[in-house]
Image (cartoon, rainbow, N blue to C red):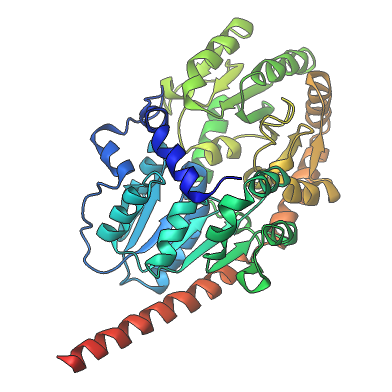
Length: 443
């Protein structure tokens, strides 16, 4: 039985390990630098004096998911500043690029003193947590400080559910402090209920990731890259691959090249620190390997066999340049559980995944039901499926259209999320107005 007191004691005891992980500089990722103090709550004052809405998004993926919500909040409440926290430097980089009245800070580690100091300096009026980043001390302190806390786009896989149940003595009370949880689907809602949350705390909004939109510049950049690679060449992308998976993809692509010599593979490793090693793997099998970071927009890439996507935040561009998408994290057992197929689906790409996709089971199930995705079990099956789709382009087009229909059918989560957020934000604004009026009357 792990109580919050024991949990906090263990946090302090393992501080050297925690900070070595937080501050470790990884190849391909920007360093935290002098901002390491923010992890212990020593956070610079905000430029804005008005209480901000605090949005916590762990890393790049969560920041991307939060972007439609951020834009909607800016449109509806232009006078309210937004404070966005991330844990990773790549997430921070993404936030800094966002326009508008936004400030970034690193999320403090879950030490009570760090969280209290952070909240004391930032004075947030409301806290929005993207997906499922739940820290016992942070939730408890938000409740103590009367800060409404809402989990947005919340998902809870069976694996995560079992972890929370295992440590129910630690999470039971903090979870009760949550103001509301906007779940992605009914399965997520059901799993959250097993953790002791009551129905009033839960609702289903759908996932905001279905409300995905791509700018004209992303589409145009993708089309430009396709032109460089060769307009008539079949382009396959292996997206978000993990260690041990690149070899499987390359083995499959060797097979594909035998039937379709002009095919090109865009290989995008999930983690930047693997860019160099993956490039070496590709070059060993395909001498005509090109890194995106070393190419220009005017280079002739028509002889390239493998194009390594070693840049950050450009996945939509690379997807837009492709015909077929294999989603990584799905062919290495249950280590990862797949990645989100919604971006390629929204771009009408024929999708392929391995058998392990438990992290996105609902989305993948919907795509399977409409034949918008194919499941393969190994390199040979992957090669066979790619070969079939290249040989029968009309099949690939049909798969892409069916995948896009799933995305279109599920749109609308943003409106539901904003309806709930508006209720709490307006309530908070009215409460502060009443408090100000009372203080003025006393004076």
